Image (cartoon, rainbow, N blue to C red; front, side, top):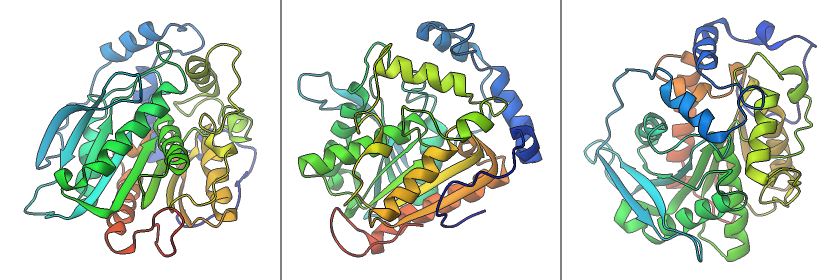
Length: 344
């Protein structure tokens, strides 16, 4: 289940219901029941947000951290300031210097916000002993590509320039994101490489959306029945790029970019997910580009499973590995173009 992989695992031509871990089924069904029919009966972003806002929310206690701070940081040139929420670990348990994680939330570039990802950010902070800077980037379709990618990079620049304020180790800056946030995390690294920094030690991508072509086999075999559907992704990409707009630019589709010189990666992939092959291909292409990458492939999991680390054993294991990978930057950090480093 865990460890490096060299290419897409196509597997038998079975449906996701046959491959899904039975322990995950109740959680998948509950999430799907409250999720809008994007690209079908729901085509308006505001309506989709209203449906999600009205859905029942978990009542579990939020993981405790040392401090939570809301603020804004300078945005891209000519653009508004970017809201961020900063999570600092308990200083008695995790004294500095510590890793600093710039985290981009998921939601197809359209949904999600700092509040909906509060528990996830807290969990990452606790698992890694890290300061987490969660980015409230501009959403589509009100703000289409490349607005969100530029906001993510602006937040990365701010974090890189204020590590002392965050109690961060100067060699342990990390970018992370899940789903569409994984896309933005990867895009921010490409922008950092083009612009000369900041230097990043590790990228952590969970079931990332990395190619607007949407032509991997997983888009066919996991098209339905996995919570996230292929129709959802087609709608998300249209909102992000605009109707009829191609996604060939590498900042939109990082899988098409030159990946040489990027920092080591820890890539989490769910087997029952239309985006499975995006993550597998990115892991493979990093290796071909000389970039160390560790793949945590969870064959029986579905898109979004990592948010269930308090109740789903597979998610708990994946979160623990994620935290370990981030903590390793304190002693094994690698930045753009330098030797050394480890992901995993």
